[in-house]
Length: 192
Picture 1 (spheres, rainbow, N blue to C red):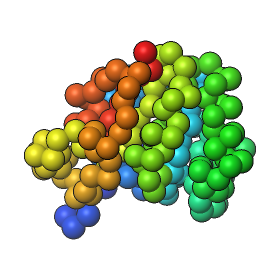
Picture 2 (cartoon, rainbow, N blue to C red; picture 1 turned 60 degrees about the vertical axis):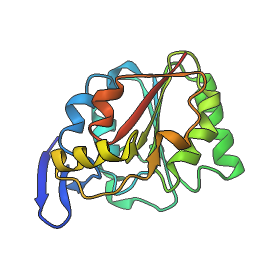
Picture 3 (cartoon, helix red, strand yellow; picture 1 turned 90 degrees about the vertical axis):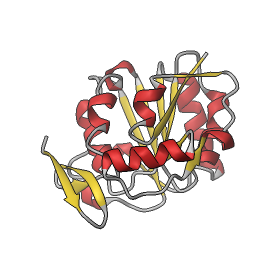
């Protein structure tokens, strides 16, 4: 798997995976690698360009399932990732929402990545369906505005936060590897 760091003075520092740009800082992968093989199912809401999807597909444990939801067709990565992983459509429409909930409730240990167009709503919609020890994460996450600015500087990151601790319902969840993940713009919580 080809992994490169792309540095652009105007747009920050991001990872390129298999020639596909991700919306991830290079410091994310070493932290993510500590947990990725713990899950039977990984659900990604917001495929984006597909670089992270490609990475997950190649790094997940053998036999685990990957589902990636996006409102746009990502033809550019269907040759790299099993096409069956992709669901084109809004995660909140009745059919897709039902599919996500059924997958969460019936498929072993689940990792749910909220990285679509409304991360806080994704988090708040699906978190109550998690099973004990399932993990939910949301991207472009800020626990504290001043701290986020520090992390932006540390990571050469120009993207503003799109999800905030104050706007999500964490009842029934505990922070999981919280300090590590928030330093690379992810909120991470485990179901109690």
